[in-house]
Image (cartoon, rainbow, N blue to C red):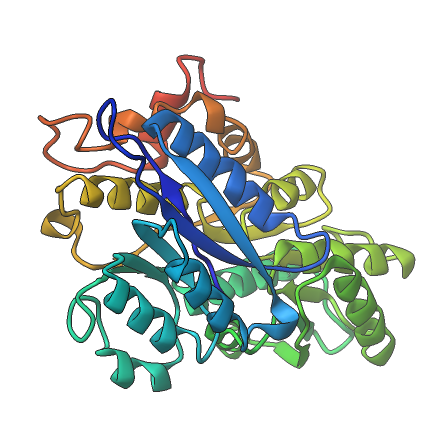
Amino acid sequence: MLLVVVVCMPVQAGSLKKRIAVFTPTTENNTYWPQVYRLLNAVANDLGIEISPHEFDVQDRFSKHIEGVRILSQAPRPDAAILSVAYGNTKPLLEAAETLGIPVFVQGPLFPSELPEIGYQPRKKYGRWVGYFYQDEKEKGYRLGCTLLSAARTAGAHDANGDINVVGIGGDFTWFGSQLRKEGLRQAVDETPGAVLLQVVPTKWTQPEGARVAALLLERYPQTNVVWAASDQLAIGACESLADTGRILGETAFVGGLDLSLNGLRHVQNAELYATVAGSMFSYAEILVYLFDYLHGIDFADEVGTVISTSLYTATAANAKFHLFLSQQYDCVQFKRLSKFYNRNMERYDFSLGHIMHLATDQSLPE
């Protein structure tokens, strides 16, 4: 999965704009990354920078490091980059960044087999690899699994033997995070008495695949009570197939995804998805602010280090309204107030959702 954010920002009047590059994976009719871009553009507008995203189809990620290196190398070169990579992309992109003197953030998780050849951590083998950020993908899969299994148990959604039957719609396994999410689901099932994991099928993340794979799994395993999906779009597609079988979502069948996306949150609020689990979209704002400050001589690593694990959140009907409200406030947040460059007396960064809500609006929180 390849993510390069190109950032352009004026430093002083009359100076050339700095430029940052962002490469992201994409799929047909993807709804996740456009939401990330909307957020990044809002951050850029407030900081006084410009975002230029570059999308790469997940069907052919292995050759994309060639295009990525070309983008980093061609004039005008970016001043920094954020890279979300598939297997085999990391080393050539870091080598190019090192040669060109471009500081980069890498988004994980990375395959363990890749780590030795890149020095394991930022600023070891490659000095221009300034930071690494990731979500705990196994924990995400585990939390979603536990949430769905608990709901099914409470609702009495099990077979005649008392077993809760689970199927999984997985992601693209050229990205290590997909494997970790599946491991998290398996752990949740193993720890839940009476839970049975029937099968997990990999996909390329699209909503039509979610519907198609769910239909096949439901035909193969008509006793299914829980559908765990590796993304919100896959989960939304699965809901379509579940509805066609006459199951009642949230009563006799429970579906959830992993994104905390605007689309997913809306389906949680409408009682179609039971839950969505992920880090907040604002984690991308956090990384962009760190890079902005770094380019202005303020090293985020002095406070937060070079390896950053972003917080995870579980959205259900109980709190979806809060997350949905916040995800619609991108243009209202005063992102400058999160930057040490713009706030020279700031002692510590604060990217908590409560603080971001405070910066977004003076309105009362939704009930």
